[in-house]
Length: 411
Image (cartoon, rainbow, N blue to C red):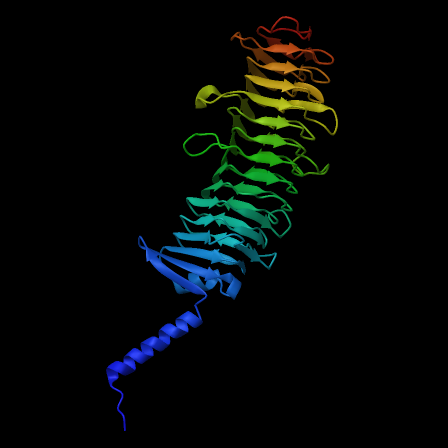
């Protein structure tokens, strides 16, 4: 009888294992880089991200191949979900559960298409989230369903180079959160392009290094950007156009709304062709259109708004304030700028022209202050009157370039 020595038996077993690995490769494979475990999940072979998260602790990079039909909950720190090639994504089949739900810090999602679920991507309480190179489309409905990207409950993060369009509700919602939104598209969402809600701060179009990185916010059902309930919007360099496609939009049909909040539009924004006002500032709010404090060009253009019915290019109402510097407010369907209900405006070197009603219109005890800073502001070519007071309580002061028609009392 021939005896097989133990050494040769062990070599035979090893060869068999190698053969099996070649013939039947694992749907999950990984290695270690810089202390972070890196794994590839073959969703196209039936594996899931959830399995990998359950099986491996610590910092983790998961590369996704194919589309995973699952709901992913990331409840720990230092997790990255990365596309490993074109067509990688996650689709949540249940419209009552968020597709990707993140509560950990330092989360990264890069290159994935995330669809379905109640909302597509939600970061709740997590810090330093980075969402980039993505497509996001939520599948749910209701007040907080059908949203592409949500930052909520004290979350903070950056959304860069993403497409969050065609959502039933908002492209992006911030609720008690801080977000930087750059190089992204928010188009044809059912409600707002970007909703900044309940004590949130949004930097829309400006990076963390204070460089301009514009977004496209177009053709959303209600407001393009809605800043509300003690929130702050810093809005730089964006195209905000054609918003308000739904006559019953819950946030109105404006390009930018500021309600019980503050907004700063340092410069570079083109606000055009919106169905309602280009900019609405209401209910004790304040807005600055043209702010030199960021050392950026201060030019903003508010043109051709109120396409659905005569309204205003800019409306300031209910004890609100507006700073207007180096702005062009032209060819709007209605008044260029209208102040009502004891609101005030400070104007520096702006041009208000070609609007179909009055250029600047004051009512209900409102006031406009034109600063003597060259070049002085120009009001001309407006249908009706270039500067009009609709009541005896409203008034203006300061120089205006020659040629303006004025029917208003000075201070």
